[in-house]
Amino acid sequence: MTTSTLHRPAATERPPVTYSRGARFLLLLSVFICAACGLVYELALTALGSYLIGNSVMQTSVVISVMVFAMGIGSLAAKPLQRRAVGAFALVETLLALVGGLSVLVLYVSFAWLRVYMPSMVVVTFAIGLLIGAEIPLLMTLLQRIRRQEAGSAVADMFAVDYVGALVGGLCFPLLLLPSFGQLRGALVVGAVNAVAGVVVVLWIFRRETRRIVRITLLASMAAVLAVLGTVYVLADDIEVTARQQLYRDPIVHAETTPYQDVVVTRSTGFTGEPDTRLFLNGDLQFSSVDEYRYHEALVHPALSGKRTSVLILGGGDALALREVLRYDDVEGVTLVDLDPAVTRLARTFAPLLELNGQALSDPRVTVVNADAFTWLRDARQRYDAVVIDFPDPDTAALAKLYSVEFYHLLGRVLTPESQVVVQGGSPFFAPKTYWSIATTIGRAGYRTTAYQVDVPSFGNWGYILATPGADGPRPPLRLAENTPPLRFLDDAVIGAATVFPLDRRPQNVRASTLMDPAVLEYTRHEWQNY
Image (cartoon, rainbow, N blue to C red; front, side):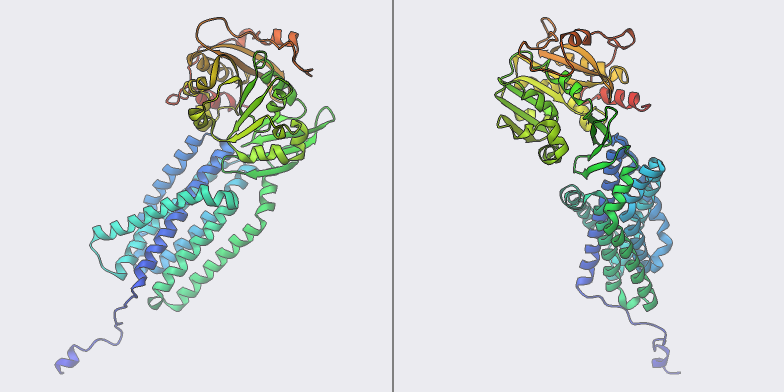
């Protein structure tokens, strides 16, 4: 046997595969896109939980911790798959696109119909994290197959692209996906992008070393996933409306999800026989047209019993408090600051709201500012004679800061020594610690306060705090101005009784709320969880 015969390559050996110059770039691009998609899934789950359940800190903590834990499990589970890295990665991305794309829909349906949101969220989050964790070792194997590198350099390249992709995904979610598609469709779009980037790119790069039957199977699976996502996309409106209606007693006449909250309006025949229009933000009732005048008369008119040339309204984007303010002819200017432009737009254009607020936002005396009230106050320079604060209850961290000592300190910048401020404080009956914590917080910020409460059938017993700057001096008197316009609910007798609290609902020993110690958030979550 000759030497040449001894060294002749076996017939079964394949020549080494060479890759084009752009192969590594394309694979890193796939890493970039998959990382962006993964972070969008995480943000979508966090945002959905905050909208549906509130308690954004808890939702964020659970999603992040479960997902990171699952990513570790996924990385370990992917070790045996590295021998077939191309097919395994394409399969992982196919499953991730399906689970991630449908995640918002599955959780929304679980919340609306099955009422098992938290267990469902943990399961879905774990599944997504498991698949995301499996990506990294498989992608590392594929990168090394294209060009062998030192382990440290390969890891550096991989994670640099991965982190930049996460940055882009994190920015695209609030700036592009939510405004353009909403939560449900946004997740579906991302799932489709994930499927194409994870499957087509990888199969194209490694097409010469992947069996034809494997390529066809994986591409068919991707096509099936895209078909499912596309079908759900087309049916998204019907699915969302049907699921959302399960959450509300009355027919929904308007619904939209904004970058800030879930806005729903229902309309039915109320217990008085009149149409009952109700506004809900993130599932919390903001008013019922049957008795909203009770709430808004009690909120506005005591604060306008003094000078009221210039008035500031914080919150109250539905313009119902504004309607009451504009009934005074000597009010020369009103600034309304509300975070969500969708709410003020609804108050300008939606017929049932226009009927209620009397087209108040069209009054030439009104200036509307869509901004976060906390941030806006830091730069505000104008002084106001009266301030009406009509924020939702402090059941999230974002709202709790608007009931903090620091917030009321900022508010002092726009007040005169004679200014009067009124704050809606929730229910002294259902949430007494929350109510008295708000009153304590305002006092701690250097105001003199007068607490009062009335009955609003849709809410039950409801409380307010009237305040004026300065720690020394008498409490602000609860009264109506002599030239108060005709009211439907409030008069001197009702005002006289409003400051009387029963024995079991009088001031309690509670903490003031600050940015570092949001006591009001703790009280709110504890007290309202049983209602």
